[in-house]
Length: 324
Image (cartoon, rainbow, N blue to C red; front, side):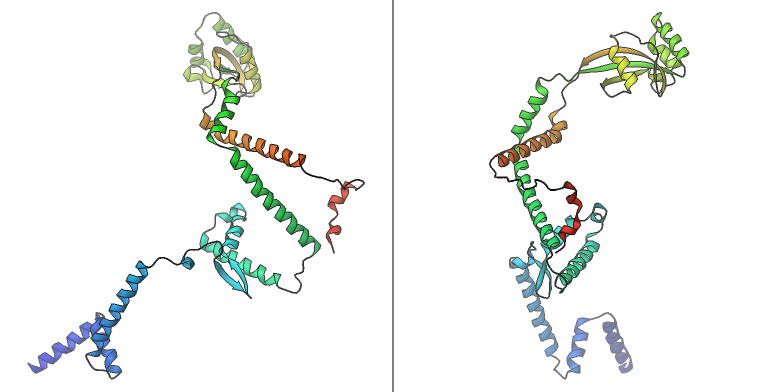
């Protein structure tokens, strides 16, 4: 029995160790440091209480400003010069489209490496502000400030009211022209087309002849093309349709597809498009007009002195002038 009990205790100890029992592991650690048996459980309870308290405090406290990234968040400092999240965002936004598709993980490392390299090179003794650099910075600043002003003008120009007014002015009383409903029969030769035109003009049903003889995709549908506006058909075909009276059949008309016999079924006034379908187009027109008006106003109040008299315009290509 004593032997069995010892074997049982040994097996229990082995099972606890294999299963990662925390109490057994903690007692072993305490024993190795010569501490009493009671110290292990007490220490574990204290650590557990502290961990729970810290976790509760982490959830209870508000997130600090540093935990919320902003454009001023410093990602890395290079010899005392900060590279911020804003710098990285702007560089990512300026990348060509093919690079925009890369994952953020890949872009993050590449952009940061690029900015670190640029920062280090800009600190080199050879990095001097030449005339070319100075002029480039002036051009860049001018363009960015102008873009900010232009964006403000453009945004102010578009609203529901201005869009509706622009829509009414463009479409409310406009004559948008005619739309045409026509059918045709397509064949390979002028002779076939003329024979068909004669047959139809003699009283044959146009749709029936189209189903029988047309080689075009609309043949099985009686040659019907549905409604179309000016400019939607190839030019010889469109011109022939516009000359027909409703119900009239054309003489043979040649296009790159073959020879056509056309019947004009009906016409109607072209309807104005829905506002939503032209919203982007109207917004662009409003913004362009607003920017033009703004520039005209600014020019009229500006003092502009022209100093280009006598300068050869070929100097525009003279890069040597940018050298110090």
